[in-house]
Image (cartoon, rainbow, N blue to C red; front, top):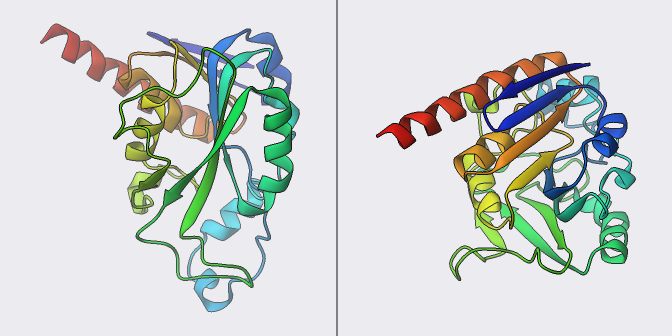
Length: 231
């Protein structure tokens, strides 16, 4: 296991299921865990886009153990979810948190593929919270639908399912408290948004390549914050 501290951020290279219970209470867990969906098919479209092969190679389609979201370890949780995971995720969160809300990321640039389903023009995330950790923000910031384009090319930072910075900035605006943990950190998008929001961040990632990308991105975000404070 590797641990790197960068200003108000602490990043762990290791297994989320082992590490998250040892990291103590955070005001919010904000995470994009592996989805549960069929990653086969796609026809000619898939052959030209190796992102699907990356999803399979990194097991990003193989679901996750929802017990990692522990209401004793966080005041609130924001969990991204594939449509097919919602029937299991919602009862889990409803049964352990005071309230929940289903929110939507709507993409104006969805991939032109359906794979015997609907096109992936929306993705869901569930915000669950206990008393005292209800969503933050003004009326404009408390909208449950965000219309933001999916990242393409370099903006993915070498990851198949990177969430856009603008979306994570919006989400972190709705997070109450000062400490955020992401058990499935990926390339650090949650951490970058948390640092920019003035919060302390803890991230866990098991893939060494993505971990190094997260270290670089969050180092840059901390430096950016320092320059802003000095101005």
